[in-house]
Length: 182
Image 1 (cartoon, rainbow, N blue to C red):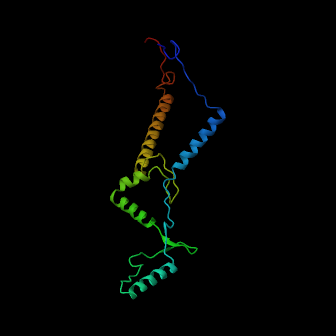
Image 2: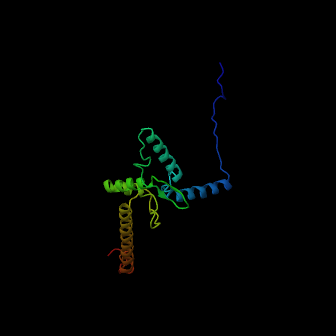
Image 3: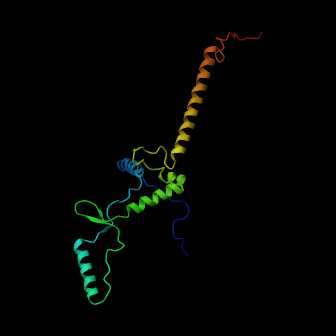
């Protein structure tokens, strides 16, 4: 029976990315990370075209013809919401107001969750970028306050050390210490 491969030893495969490709890949990844902070941009245009006046007239005429034979001729537009005007003669219906309503409901019922879901993205009104992805505004403020406190503590320690050097606590000659066994 055959072993199928070489006897003993091991094989290693090493993949090296060319330098020209590596730099381009790094730039591409950095750009992708910046773009990922944009967040979800919902479509706010028309989803469904509205019925044209000619179509409405045809449906009304069909209803009138049906009623001439004793059949019910209902208004085909009964129960339909008013179509929105999107400019340029485009009439239609959009689901965007329902989306906005759902967001407002989420924010009202679960404000912390709403803030956490929006934390990694830029503020769409001000354009402010998130400091750290997945941190809410309150968490970011707390982290910044903690960093400032740590900086202040480090500056205070550095000041104490400098003061100690000048007073001779660390510098024996300045303190009058002459050394030796007295």
